Amino acid sequence: MILACQNINKSFGEKVILKDVSFHIEEKEKAAIVGINGAGKSTLLKIIMKELSSDSGEVILARDKTIGYLAQHEAVSSGNTIYEELLEVKKDIFELEHRIRSLEHRMKSLNETELSQILELYNRLNTEFEQKNGYACRSEITGVLKGLGFEESEFNKQVDTLSGGQKTRVALGKLLLTRPDIILLDEPTNHLDINSIAWLENFLINYDGAVIIVAHDRYFLNRVVTKVVEIENGRASTFPGNYSTYSEKKARLREAALKAWMNQQKEIRHQQEVIDKLKSFNREKSIKRAESREKMLEKIEILEKPDTETKELKLTLEPRITSGNDVLTVKGLAKSFGSNQLFSDLNFDIKRGERVAIIGNNGTGKTTILKIINQITEADRGTFTLGSKVHIGYYDQEHHVLHMEKTLFDEISDDYPSLTNTEIRNVLAAFLFTGDDVFKQIKDLSGGERGRVSLAKLMLSEANFLILDEPTNHLDILSKEILEQALKRYTGTVLYVSHDRYFINQTATRILELTGNTLINYIGNYDYYLEKKEELTKIYAPAAAKQEVEAQFSESSGKLSWQQQKEEQAKLRKRQNDLKKTEDRIHELETRDSEIDILMTQEEIYTDVAKCIQLNNEKASIAEELEKLYELWEELAE
Image 1 (cartoon, rainbow, N blue to C red):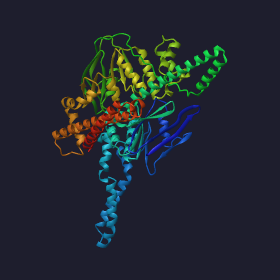
Image 2 (cartoon, helix red, strand yellow):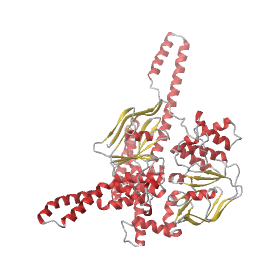
Image 3 (cartoon, rainbow, N blue to C red):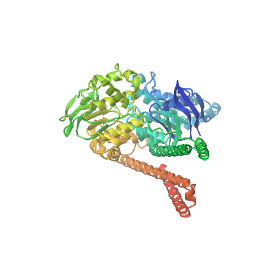
Image 4 (cartoon, rainbow, N blue to C red):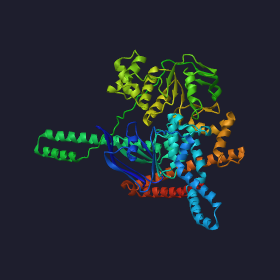
């Protein structure tokens, strides 16, 4: 065990955030902390880091273990360049290298006696330098920066000139390079594009230390974590497995708890009816029997009613009128900012009923395309045409469609003056704004709250063509799932930009990837995109495909030919797929083996000879298959 939280309690005024929260993290374990917005996830991380004190309870970190933390909006600020800022993390290694070089310079002018005296120190410093991976230090820094989406041309940019999201990425890079024994990450994917998220996934999966993640990215959690700690109503519950395993188990537990509570309530009502009936007889014996039953009833441990009244937004998207079949036609679209050409000669069209996702690296121009269609930004060249009866509803990730100085109530009433006060309050209540919340100013809301207001306006618009820019940013997992369901039921057309791969996989019927200044069309969801990406990129954006492979193999196989690099990449991808399938099968068999162990402890099973034999045979078969799978996994993992 590397970290333990024991009976953590925390309140802010009368509001209880955490109640007797206890869990532990093993060495090298990857864990997620999940819960709705406001559940206390970030508060818990701050208590672990001693940035916030708990009301009671303790956090225990194993002796001599280091811990690193990236807060949700953490950013660096300095006069350094991006590269210099990361060099600071490895300062001790570079100082060590400087000492070694100085000794080498001195050794040239020493006699034999002096030389023998200094050689011991020189050898010791060299050994320490090698142990600290000094020779690969600079390439490690370069690899982390590229992995987090920085081009080499950006390495010399001053940190103070960067955007907030870029500064957060620099802070994340510094943390990863320090390689503490345990890493705490609060929403690490918020400022990363899809490729950078995939890189971070692989980094964390292979990380030699423990990791605790607070994130709403389900695809990310499914790939990285092996344990989920859920914070619900202030209490913590631990579930082995990834997010999908937790979600399925949670649903079964909730259903079982509700059933048990309902059965107990039914039994209590029945006993009370019998007691009342016995008392109504008004005989000595019947009254004694009633009193006896009352005592038994008092001894029953009353089950707490499961919380079925979970607060969730109520989102219904429905167009007021039906558009024509041709919703959007784009021809020859081009846009540059100074010498930076985002894209040129983009051509695509969207038909009624399609849900189209635009994906690509940060800075390729995805949001710019949406702004051009919404006439917020002008294109340099090209045209776009909206079809017959098309009415746009726009969701802007920076919420420029909202007026910061207005209250929530005025924001809705000014745009929809036909709504009554009661109707406005009902709409806001459906998006979790009740009571005096409706009189808060937009500028005082959190990012997630502004997102909910934007979604409320989107619902009221009754538009038949929704254009959404990062609609899942700042939404908790439950709200994302509700938005997914609303979009899947929506009979209009959707064009959106997102880096949430799970969301894309659930909602997209087509994907447009913006790469190499052009668009590549994939007729399917995110899984289909992954399957066809290499093949279609090579055909439609060969320059981008070559650049991607060269970047992947620049250090490890710089002397390989283009064809050899492609073959190596294909082999690596196949091995990764085989490894994933093997891990999934091992998890499936281990889960079933545990289920059999539980079954064998049940009286109706261990008293049934035939059933025992059947389960023992199944258990032996599982053990045999697992043995082979473990060997295969070791081969693939090497």
